[in-house]
Image (cartoon, rainbow over all chains, first blue to last red; front, side):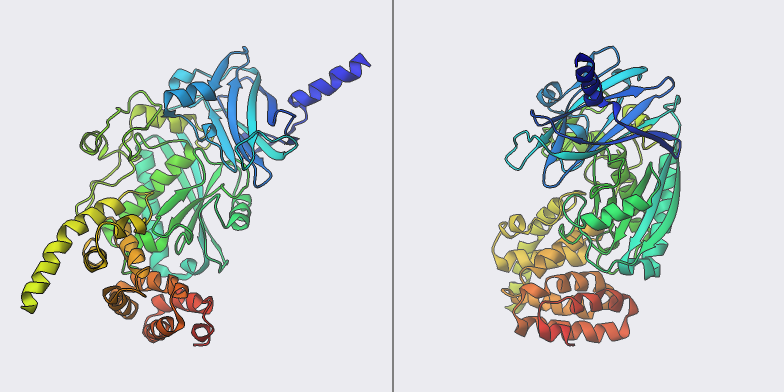
Length: 365
Length: 148
């Protein structure tokens, strides 16, 4: 009897993963039901040579999830939601309660190297009243990469033209030109970007990831390879008029979901004439690089309230528009392009710590 | 006298266009039209929105966000209505024209139908505009618009 009880405990601790490999990543997949505390307690083994993992939790709608803690193979807590929240710094989208939530580890150099052995994470499942919810099923994936060089890596993207934009030669021309510039931008950060193009014939208006068009985004992301960022080019982001780009997560989910895409609005990036000038193509390239920067794991160095910052050591904590523009007018992840009425300052730079976040991400392998 | 009124109108609009441009430049801000409309009266805000859309070219989403806010005022303001007519008909403002069509369903049929007819006319001469405009009209909640 005691043996049976112990066996059930082991299964409950996370041994019921399905293991596979895809695109150079080791994958663990499972479905879990939240326990009486409204949490998933996950345990998984990190193997020798693995240097980063990305966990994605996709609970049944309308419930949401948030990472509460991460414990390493030495049983040390390396991520604690209370500590991160108190610091008022944005470290990972995993610290926020979302319909699909992901956490990459490590994120920064000071997070240390991944160690082989059993790691654990507790994930809260949250209902509409912001309470922990028991008995909720979630789809879960952990992806591991073996990438010992955090100064060079590959990013793969699949750009999908949805609906009429795929037949619009001007949008296709501008997108291809912008992708070439985006590749140049990422090359400066040690990232080799490969992009393939695709189309989808859906005629329905496209919404924002996590807010609408969920079935379409889940389908499109399932058609991409594992570890390949899905970039959607739509006419507009219908439920967020005027938004020119929208990433589904920071970092993005590693399994197909309604958030597993980055969406760009052709009209809002092309302007009033539906034609892309050279300057607009430059800005489109920066927008692609910026939004996929979010998807890989980067936050803005400062939010526009000037009282919320990322958790990186080399992004200064400015607190006024003037001081922030002085610090970041050329930074790719600054939330505002610095423009006159007819031209913008190129935003092509990233700090070493920002580059480090990208290279530690499983999205850059 | 007309010249003076026009000059005053422009003089009033200038600071507002700067405020609007600043508000609409951030990447993820969207078009918070309520905040913009609260910057002044319709007689000052709408011309400033139109001027912003027609003169601020970078970043391009400043103009599209301004156009979106204009689209929300078509039924209550003649300057917004006139801008909608102009943009739906003008091939160099096709993007703004489509944004006007995105708001067609919020208009009463007697306002929506003439704008839709202008869009059909424009679509006969511009394949680019037709590609995006016709599906919008086909999806309209107004039966008369769908029937065009």
